[in-house]
Image 1 (tube, one colour):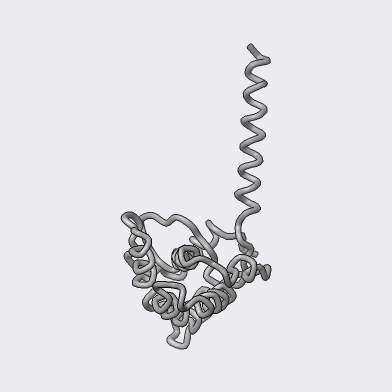
Image 2 (tube, rainbow, N blue to C red; image 1 turned 120 degrees about the horizontal axis):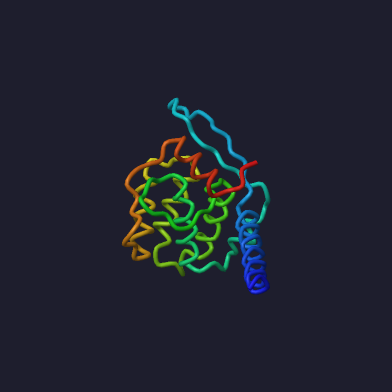
Length: 167
């Protein structure tokens, strides 16, 4: 009986350690700084720790991949009952996605929407991030997880700390 227990227990523990290690190591490495906007409000600024956005967002990205990237980045800034997926919303990612969409403008059916969102974000304007999220969510056929507000800087920091490896 003890041998059967050990035969089951060891692989289960090993699998748990491997999965937990993968999930921990798979988080994006970012630095976070809380600044003050010209209007006086707190603003969370996230930056990449490694420069892999060119590989992560190749110029040949599909339109669905662009949608998913914008959607996942918007999760950092919005409130919703359910959120699936997270990418750090960084200047590096926004600039690269702008390049990708510009290069594929004639090929993407919703290029104007993506460009409007990304240009706004590139300027640090997240006033319409709820509408941005919900527009992409709707294009993707969303039924659960509609954004219902903008996250406070504290809520944004909590999301960042839960989903990314903050240095």
